[in-house]
Length: 135
Length: 72
Image (cartoon, rainbow over all chains, first blue to last red; front, side):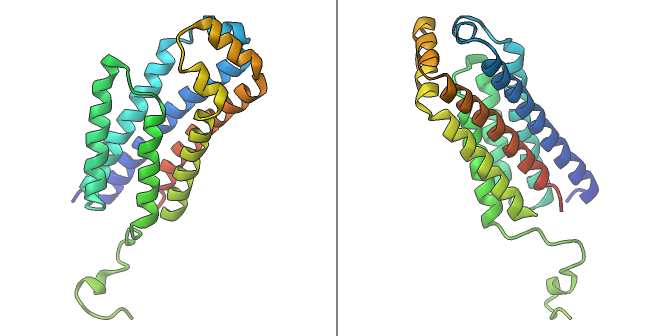
C-alpha cells in the first residue's frame, strides 16, 4: 500500500495526461471544423497532434491502472487498464486502432465507477474493520 | 464524487460515439479517396461540424471525468 497523498498525486497526473490527450483531440476537431471541406479532404493534419493524443491517452490508462492497483481498490480494473494501455502502446507502430477504441475503455471505467462501492474515506471505517459497530 | 466521475466518463464516451456514428463521419473515415471525402463533407457540412463538435466535446468531458475520479 502506497502513501495516499502520493497515490492521489499520481492519479491527478493520470487525469492530466488524459486531459492533455483530449485537448489534442479538441484541436484536431477544431481544425476540421475551421478548414474548408477541400482542405479537410486533401490536406493533412499534423501527425504530431494525433501522436500526442494517442501517447497521452494511453499513458493515462496505464498510470491510472497503476494507481488503482497500488491503492488496493479495484485491482482487476487496474490490471485491465494497464494491459489495455500497454497493448495500445504496441499499436503506436501499426496505427490500426481507431480513436473510438479509447472511449470503449473510458466507458468501461465509467461503468465500473458507478457499480463499485465508493472508496472509504480515511478513518471513517476504522472501527468497522475491527468488527465493532460504528457509533 | 465517484458516481459523478462515472456519469461524466459515460456521458463523454457516449457523446463521442454519437459523433463517430453520424453518417457523414462514418462515410468520410471509411474511404481513402479524397474526392469522395470532399463530396460527403460538402453534401452535409452542418452534420460534419456537429460530428466534430461531438467528438471534441465528448473527449474532453470524458477526460474531465478522470479528474473527478481523483476528487475524494
